[in-house]
Image (cartoon, rainbow, N blue to C red; front, side):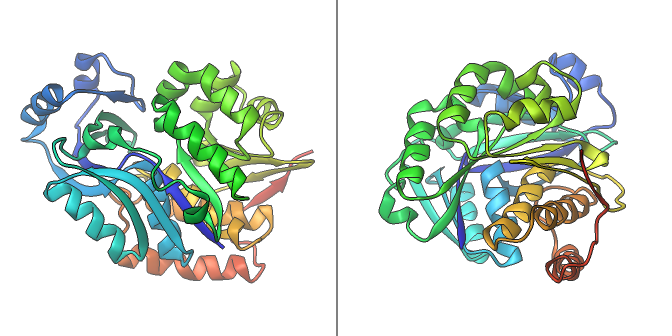
Amino acid sequence: MAIIGLGNALTDILVQLPDESLLHELGVERGGMYLIDSRKHHQMMSRIGHLPHSVAAGGSAANMVAGAATLGTRAAYVGHIGKDSMGEAFRRCQEQKQILPLLGLSEQTPSGKCISMILPDGERTMLTYLGAALEIDTRHMTCENLRGYKVLFIEGYLLNCPEVIEHAMKTAHDAGLLVALDAASFTVVREFKAYAEKLMDRYVDILFANEDEAAEFTGTQDPKEALEILARRCNLVVVKVGPQGSLIARGNERLHIGTIDATPVDKTGAGDLYAAGFLHGFTQEFSLRQCGEMGAVVSSKSIEVMGAELPGEVWNSIRPLIERIEAGERVVPSVILG
């Protein structure tokens, strides 16, 4: 079975910061995501141009489908790009990964970009110019296009596009798909909490959130309590708790999945790649423990490199671990929660 992703098609500009002074100067919280306009984007690029940086195709849902496709899951992606070099590079990148790109094209608006400011401990804070990504529409979200897929994965950053996200979720359910929503960022949850909860009650089957996002949803700093509250809204909930791994709830099942040893360099895309590993297993109907272990392996390996675009040697180290999990071996520590 296959996965289709829906999200903001962005190019990530990965900038290494020596400390948090620029974040304080900008008045942003570490780990958050903030929308900026084109003028602010150009101002920021002038400010950070002298710092070490790199560029890669990105966007939360795009990162997820890229990871799933690399693991061998058939995948498609719906987004919107500009008629420019960055948009064309985004398309080529998807095709090279064997992802079916269902991309709208803007003649006038430039492709979206995300400045990801990375601290020495690997935490990233994002300033996003959506550009053409904001023009995403539902032309590709038809029952015909969704036939043959098992899961529609939607990034929470699209909560600011209610006409798109709600139509996509309803169409997916009409076509027999499960809907997975990633909470995206605590700043997104803070702004769109009421609307997100409405969608969760109506459409969302699978929810991915980290502990900060779960806390914004539930008002509790205890991830286990947050898991239980969110499990009343969605059939399957994953709360990621950083180095402690992830907490998973489905029906009466409760699991704590650990991590594998990793030295954090950059956490950009780690949550997206957790979802890639998890859903790769889920679409093949592996157990909840195996799905969680697959997510843990991919995300743990991802934080050891810059960006969400993992080099071939990293994937070569991931695949044998995934195969061992598929064979039933326990690769990641896990505990059944009472």
